[in-house]
Image (tube, rainbow, N blue to C red):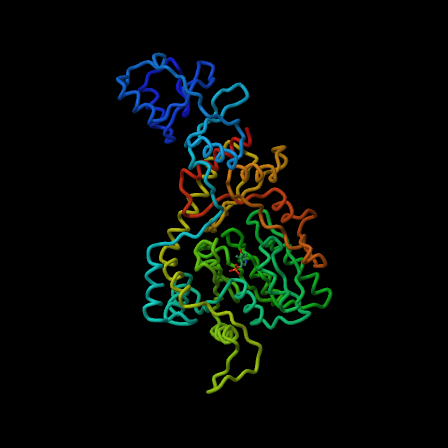
Length: 487
Ligand SMILES: *Cc1c(COP(=O)(O)O)cnc(C)c1O
């Protein structure tokens, strides 16, 4: 019997090699029959033994193990482990329990940081950037911007688009399109990133936060209905509803649109996280009166920073283009009648965007694969409940998100996050709901049920490393560490 890290002392050199071959660590721990460590053998050590005349059939008992292997106690954090490797000028660390029994071998690379979601370039981006340089289209506007907008329209099926400097800018422009002004009310999902609702404050308007539903984690149609009725009773006609598609998953758009039409309040779809996702076959971001994408560094595709406002309304997109370029009137001199903004995307960055669009579908596939690998790899931990995907939904799985069901475990999400951080693995809490933020402490918050779903998701939720450039090996490390945490 052998584990993937150990070989018993009564085995042969060939057995040791076999373990090294299968564990891809480049080393194996020779152990007593009770699992206690005798010595670490690297593939280099074995090569030396063979050169000295030992053979594959030499019993390990015939070898003189006289070196002391460097060990660490199981649970040692990645930072301390790395210091130990550097001090000793070695690449392998044997992790042992209190009885000096071998639990794991880590290679130096197993201690490298694993990021939540980092930029992942394809092969075309650099070509479009070079084109911009060669033609000196460095300043805002230019062929890359136009082409980037056109291609987003082609892919998603929306009619018009304007590329801007950030998703936040796009949301701001969306609110301006719907005439949101000081004192106006705007409904917004509570469980989201603050960028969804900061632009409400730019306009000195008043946010009303709406709870999530457990099925999609997104805006609960019942809660939205309740919120709109509540405002109606107060004789308030809100100007907009910002519906957020969290972690790449569409909201229940059919139900939400029906309610928005009933109360005659337009929807802005914050699809910053959900480019490439579908709902009933149609692209996320194309359901609202206006839709917003983000190309921030950690999103499914990136321009390093950027965003896009999309709509089937030509008028709204033309007006947004005007506002995003300092509201400059067409006159032979600089002539202005309205407040403008400097929100346009640069032609260099749009070049990155064009290249990224070529790999969008690949990126969605890979993120979905990562999600499935987590679900399968962690199926032995029933307390970990992954964000569902209902029939008719096709998430881009921007981030794999899950909740730790508190009725099924004593461990908390904070403990898990602390543990992973110690292993140099970047995981995150689910967004902290906006109604719990000091910034919005006086805002109205509406839930459908007595208890708040968004609070539950925040208190128990986790986002796991999900970048499309995450290797299987790195993901397996995350899975293994999570399993170890629960052991
Ligand atoms: C990232 C994000 C935004 C903002 O996009 P930026 O391009 O970073 O300004 C808005 N809403 C949500 C839900 C996001 O995740």
